[in-house]
Amino acid sequence: MTSTLASYWSSTEPLVHLFLVDFLLRGALVVWVLIRKSKTPQTALTWIVLIIALPFVGLVVYLLIGETRLGKWRRRRHAHALETIDRPEVRASADPKTHVELETPSKQIASVAEQVSDAPTVGGNRLKLLGDSKEFVDLLVEDINGARNHVHMLYFIYLDDHSGRRVADALLAAVERGVHCRLLVDGVGSKAFLKSKLHHRMKAGGVRIAACLPVNPVRMLFARIDLRNHRKIGVIDGQIGYTGSNNLADAAFAVKPKYAPWVDCTVRIDGPATKELQVLFLEDWYMETDEFLEEELCFRPTVHDDGLPVQVIATGPNFYTEATTQLIQACSQIARRELVLTTPYFVPDQATITNLQVAARRGVAVTLVVPRNNDSWLVGSASRSNYESLLKAGVRVMEFRKGLLHAKTITVDKDIAFVMSANLDRRSYELNFECGGIIYDTDFASELRFLQQHYMDNSDPISLETWLKRPLAARVRDSAAGLMSPLL
Image 1 (cartoon, rainbow, N blue to C red):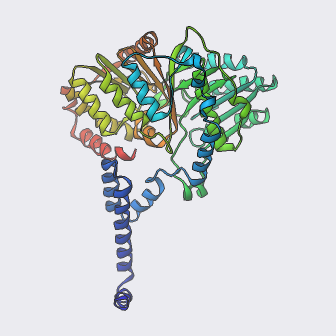
Image 2: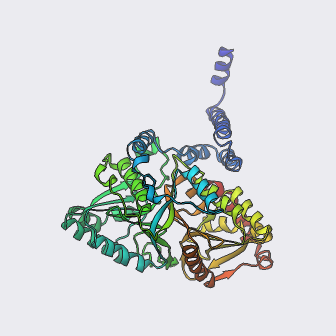
């Protein structure tokens, strides 16, 4: 048998050999995809079509971005970080004064969040909602100027613009006072900053700076290169914390001025929940630098008697990948009167879309607010591919017209508020490191709902009748982009 195959192989043309090798490789890869993506059949089908339709190219693309490969070295280091840093005794919930008893349905959301993201709710937090980028930078600089021990910052994008330089000046002044300042930025999102004069000036002045998940040819061989750290975290003296959608950049966003202003939302935390943000920063710092900051881990934030309950949630490609989508689905199921969601990128899984449809059909006022002009035409088209099914179910879809709405927020019945770094898309669900806060307080949720209303007042509603009359070319374009949504 072996000699017959060898004889056949030697008698055929090289082009036939190439065809057979390609056929066998694609067949093996299809089987691999079916096994690996069995939990997400829509994603599996998209990859199989791509592999079959594009000989060799589909194989290369899948090897580059088809698997969620963080890399064996980083996985081991992260596992060690969880053992040494994320210990029960150092978490904010270890303090009995932070324990809170929530009412239903808040208790149900908190239960889901704790199970899928290992995040307990902690009380005693004073909060400030920041819906203006300048106000965010002003307050952050003020807090840095008041720092006495350390400043820890983790941001996806840091720009060498007015806001970036203001923060840099505050950090450099803090270093001169003896404050330990550490800055983590994403290796791709902050690529320009890492090559800038501002970066060199900050390092020369004593600010410790590290890049998350750097991209290079060697890393491409062992890990997926588009896994990004999309978190936005600020921690000052272990007491003051920031999280939300703001990057360290002007609203004018110099790298993409066509879509400006970028409209963001961040929450400032004064209290125990800051410890949860601190733990996340220290884990990411350790993963990139191999430096374990034991002293900073021991800081205990003050618990305020008049403070609010906050639950910090975190996700990443190596853990809790289903946390965001499960929480959104839980909100859709628990909402009794109203559910409002804002996001710049809306490319969720089918389960999320179905839950939003069901919520609308059972009488919940579901509103989705997205930007009219998206900085990614492909993602924008994929987002629009979902409009028709949502509109038919009774979901109100609105497009923000005064810039790029970058705020990632959710309110449930004006009782529960989410302020996050995560978009409502599969990249945030499965590939990015993300974080955010859930606030269980009617007054705060109402304040966020008021901000969401401002977004809606500056948006145009999409009517089903008008939407169905779109040009054929636009409908085909959006539908084609929607088919690619499992890979975006």
